[in-house]
Length: 79
Image 1 (tube, helix red, strand yellow):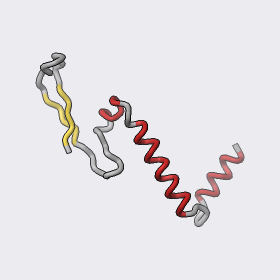
Image 2 (tube, one colour; image 1 turned 180 degrees about the horizontal axis):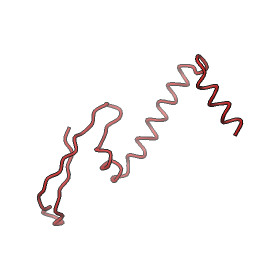
Image 3 (cartoon, rainbow, N blue to C red; image 1 turned 45 degrees about the horizontal axis):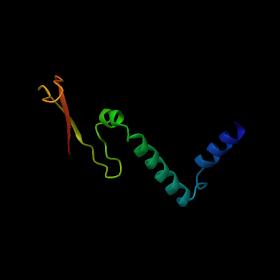
């Protein structure tokens, strides 16, 4: 616990984090988020946000029965 607290304080201190470490942390965070988006349900819930391009697809619903499964509400995404 002390080690974790010390690392947090060090990383929060001005000038204690190099640009290389910051860039590595950003890439790691992006990778973790993108790996979690591989689940179809999570992508659907987040509205298919594309993190790398900083664009968000719009979430739309159409009140029409699906021809394949008969579900009463179709969901789709647009850019």
